[in-house]
Image (cartoon, rainbow, N blue to C red):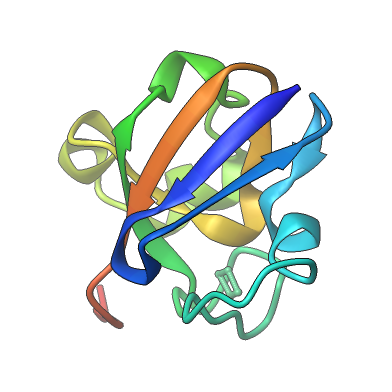
Amino acid sequence: MAKVTFQPDHLTHECEDGMMLIDICEEVDTALSFGCTEGSCGVCELTVLKGRENLNKFTEEEKEYLYEEDLENGMRLGCQLKIRKGEVTISWKGNRAK
Ligand code: FES
């Protein structure tokens, strides 16, 4: 089992290994929102506070949308995230246009 903590919601949710974050969000009452769901709008931008190693690699969409420095600092696009295993903690502030 994997575990995701949505820090702004003060919420932790257990899920199966390998689930997409966007699918997990359908099961929980989170304020994290999505727009295009295809990695092109940035509405789902978030920061991974813990467990980066437990996520999928950066997708082409993330490399296209986010700055390299942002990726290095833990920013990801929520709609592109897969929780491979273990514990992950995420946070977000709102939208930011590139
Ligand atoms: S929902 Fe548009 S980039 Fe994730």
